[in-house]
Length: 266
Image 1 (tube, one colour):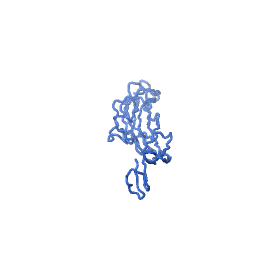
Image 2 (spheres, one colour; image 1 turned 45 degrees about the vertical axis):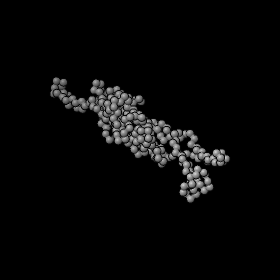
Image 3 (cartoon, helix red, strand yellow; image 1 turned 90 degrees about the vertical axis):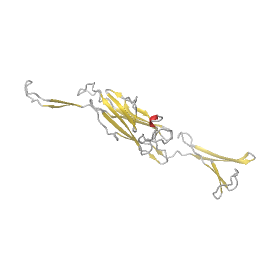
Image 4 (cartoon, helix red, strand yellow; image 1 turned 90 degrees about the horizontal axis):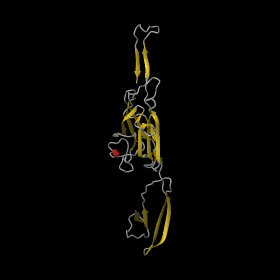
């Protein structure tokens, strides 16, 4: 849009003519969609008479992309405390992702269009060995009947109510609370169960020790570049099998005094 003003700062006579002692101010609103391409801007004005342009003036400018960048902070803890599960014992894990970036110009440090979660293996499966994830909560929103531990928050109808979402905002105005500004955080919580149907020996880690939780945060930056922050194998339930007590005397006979043998399995 443009406005014409007189030399003393007031509005010009608004006769649609660019006359002496009048100034034209042009205001452009723009959105940078690629920081790697040219951001040069050219402004031109032409004038003349009788619907003919006799003169043109051109000025070149450069659009700054602003200063700031996002950064990921990760903590294996959160509002819902961790419960270490074991053999026949259910457990819970909570992680917290925080945008620890720096932002000089608004929006330059924000994480947009987040995808995140917890799961097993590189595909974020809900089951590995005899450990199964039974509940998944992302930013305070419980995911009903999940088929994977990795959730695309962007374009997800579960994340359209800002009153239900923890930490996330709709900064880009796409209708989904899938953005994380500098200083904000959200949590991911999983509850899991460990099957008792698999026997565990003291020297055998198969089943528990090899089931390892992975987490991740993927996001777009202010330049629409996609960033990936994996957290591999941040936790693994461990079985603990210990011979606690054997009260038999070293020289006791097998038909002598009974002895106590206690075994702890977790």
